[in-house]
Length: 335
Ligand code: CO
Image 1 (cartoon, rainbow, N blue to C red):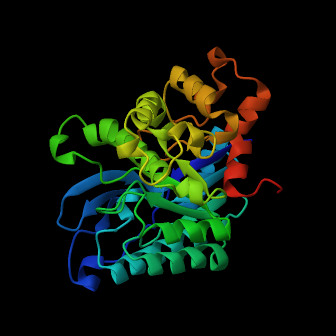
Image 2 (spheres, protein in one colour):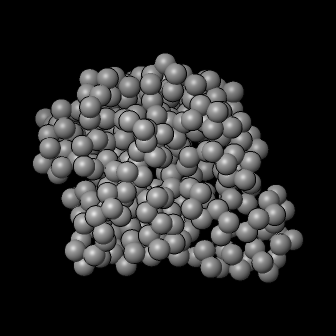
């Protein structure tokens, strides 16, 4: 049994939001040959080549049958967050993506769980769409970015959204996007290789230092890519907290290590030594299989690292990583 908590989905056809909203910056899909499309920015800049399994539930199920994945947790592609757009347009695009995602889940409820996307540039709209995602569309939660324009996840404007998620029992998946320092990372795919792990560490640190976990102890948050750079720099972050509480402990008096074990990460670290380390740090009750399907930086054979015999993980630990912890994070443990 495998549940993959980190997979992305897009509709086969995206609206022409540039015309609809009267300004550009949105992604559109160019279907240039059967089963394939180019994700393009509406200024004509190429973003990414994608295949049918990004939008087709049937193509995904075929892949899942081959790789032994029982269920995928679907979320949009982070470039679709549109946090930079006018709030009402962000709401409009979020609703379109959420309706589509819910439809794909409804066509194959045995195979998919759903996470929505929210117009986080407007707190009230985001809360309302979160309620709609959970109560009307039957989703398990939402995926959010590692930051929202100039707001880190410690920003008080975002707190009501987290509070609403806790109240609803909705899971939150934090995914890196819009990577810091991108202007200095134009070569070598560095935003993905260096920026993304830094973004995740920024997101975790912001939620800890901002007291989000302290104030919302029942909130269930999972971070992508094994927590990015956070696990490997926790010693430094902890030491910084002790050395300069005047800088670090201004919004929450408890040290970062206090929150280890109180949030989730996915298993997408690409290295057995790294998986061993996060397992030692967080424990098997905090790590869920995540592959970034269907993208090339993901784990092509879902669960290969967890099942690698060289790691010699026990079956109960493997079972938690492959599906048990995912059910706990999704709030479906009793099912
Ligand atoms: Co991803």
